[in-house]
Image 1 (cartoon, one colour):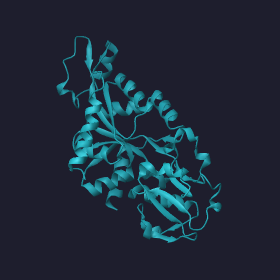
Image 2: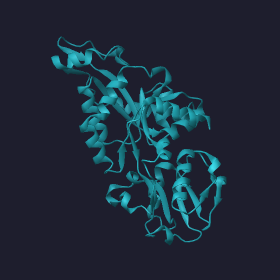
Image 3: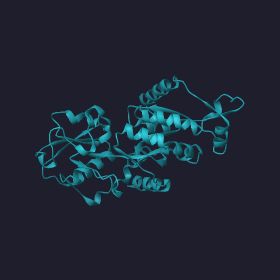
Image 4: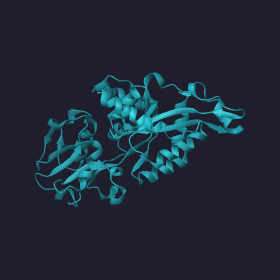
Length: 317
């Protein structure tokens, strides 16, 4: 998957589009010099940057792959400059490409996936992508445009779920919490359809590409969807309060679904990550995130050692 010509062409197209945008590479002022000088030991991609003029400090360039353009990213770029970073986001429509671009050295990091998704990618591709810090966990639940309660879901109902292994398994747990199915407790974090041990209403799971599940909400042939609340079009004004059943984001069983900023294993010690984490934790960025996600995502600060331990455990399953 990572090396076919069509995938590489798409990556190059996104990169070319991004590089056509104006880039800002310096900041001015003695305060910026003092703050950044101690942290910038080895710039990631500054080798080709122009020499800064007197009184100016060169920024560390970071290219981060994601899956959607947002005001949240704009806040990260703006605050990142204050922290010594020149951040450029590359956004892909295909949720597998941010990892592919990272493995192929086209970007420095990505910021879109939870640990469970990352574990599956690493396992399937023999890659070594590694978390550097956590960001948020999104609220997931069971939603229906036609049924007001789980009890109203009829026998033989069709429920749309993501088709990727990590989020398919997550959907099974949500449906189990809703009382619609039972899952073999020995199936681990990644149960498959064959691990469903009870399905009293003979629910039919309709697998849809992860990035498109929310569009099935208004499909009259679909009774319900399992999806992140913040994936819905904001115009629909759907919130977690509308869920027939909602995942407990604070439960320990939800920890595999914490979203992370990640890079390759040989780059995890770069001092830029501390500056980037400081940027993500800034109150202005947090506010932009809350507005972007409409309050449907929770900031999570987990020790990076815990994230990496969880990744290793999940990858081994």
